Image 1: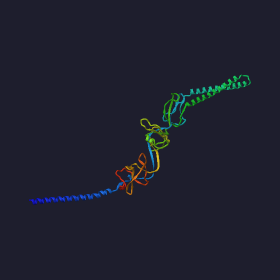
Image 2: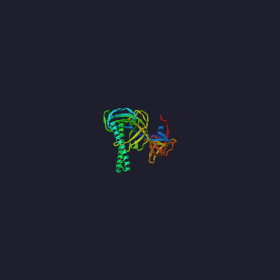
Image 3: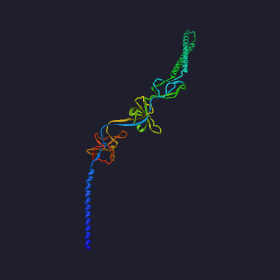
Image 4: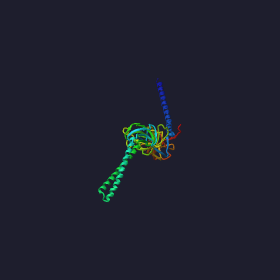
Length: 375
């Protein structure tokens, strides 16, 4: 019985030894197989598509600002009465196109004509008095020279003559004023334009500077835009703009910055900027929505990369260039950003380099890469 039990225990021990040996052999083989697989995965090149790379070459850079606003006529005025009186007629209405010098309205001229006649009569009277005073002076001076009249009488005649001359000079201006008032009774257009609003009508009595109508030159407009200070500080009067306007489809108008307000608007803190539309068009109107761009700075033959290509570590800024199938760290200095921060003008790189432009994480210098064509 003891012999059988002993034999059984020896058999169990042998089986256990064989199991341990088999497990050790299998584990060793698995580790040996895994190591080449890991090494193969580590040495496999990182695949990149053309869209993830950027070839550096000299190019022109443009920094632009965008704006929106509404159009308003540059030449617009309120036509007012230059004389006081009753409006005999108003010859135009809203929307009528008028030419410079065209008759717009007419005042009653009965009183104005009477005043003109009165002033002319007064002038004729003082001119007659002047002639009499001139003859009297000549006579008195001649008689005084012959001691027939006193020197005092001659002096009095001379003073009277001078006084009459002054009165004539004053009176001569009065008919001119009356004739001008008579001419101003006809209200004429100061420039070519369109009647915006008719304020006064026939039969109304208006004082001097009474409003009659508004006149606008809608063929020559400007855009009033509200812009943030960050954009305005880069702008200057005279810079050119490209503008599109509501109702004109894809047509592009040429513009120019004409005025920049020196103060911000209360509340919004934006700054008014006025962009003149250089192209004349009779179909232009006030109140049209417009949008455009202004090139505030340009530079030719500069080297630039997408801002996403610039990386940063403890040693500073750099890009990863592709050379002979490997990623190479290239230190870089950013001069300034362009295209609203999308491009970085750089120094320290050479034309012809190819750099990784996509913000791919985990890339390191020395890593193998392979270019594949995107599908």
